[in-house]
Length: 180
Ligand SMILES: CC(C)(COP(=O)(O)OP(=O)(O)OC[C@H]1O[C@@H](n2cnc3c(N)ncnc32)[C@H](O)[C@@H]1OP(=O)(O)O)[C@@H](O)C(=O)NCCC(=O)NCCS
Image (cartoon, rainbow, N blue to C red; front, side, top):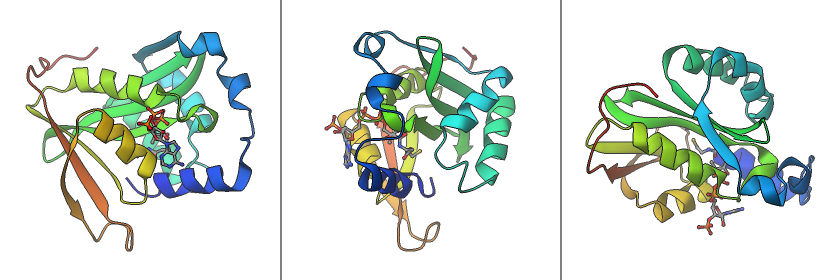
């Protein structure tokens, strides 16, 4: 999943306090009041605004538009504002997978990713659920380990110098093939 982790670390290192202070973006009450819902085309600009890869790689904006049209996108909302999104599809060898998980930069490390990943897992309609991430993305790996994913191998040649790790989780009762 390309350079997400690297970018994540760069922001954390360079700023210390993030541009929109986390307490502004997500107050204490909002932390307990996060709503997960299906994303629609109306959300396109909000997802582009929060995605830290968009300013660096214009293709990401096109992917967001395509995911909203073709895949299942879930968004996390706090107080009516979108603070994260996740994409479910079957692009990984026809298996249920997370194509992307992206949390607003100022809201990371507050378990919003866990909430979205849990909701994405409920959509999984294959016996195994896959997520991939770069070796450099420690945050994502921590989240996946905590949620019971196990390492399932890696691919060297996607991002040279930063292998793509494949994580897998067994799903005991796969969902029926229906959308939310
Ligand atoms: C990776 C990401 C989705 C995780 O979402 P999140 O809401 O921050 O996740 P959580 O708060 O549930 O868990 C994050 C874990 O990383 C840990 N963490 C926080 N900062 C960290 C850092 N700089 N280095 C390593 N781990 C870190 C947290 O302690 C937490 O683990 P723990 O609670 O088990 O100790 C989010 O950080 C993000 O959007 N990153 C940019 C996009 C990306 O990398 N997506 C993944 C590839 S698709």
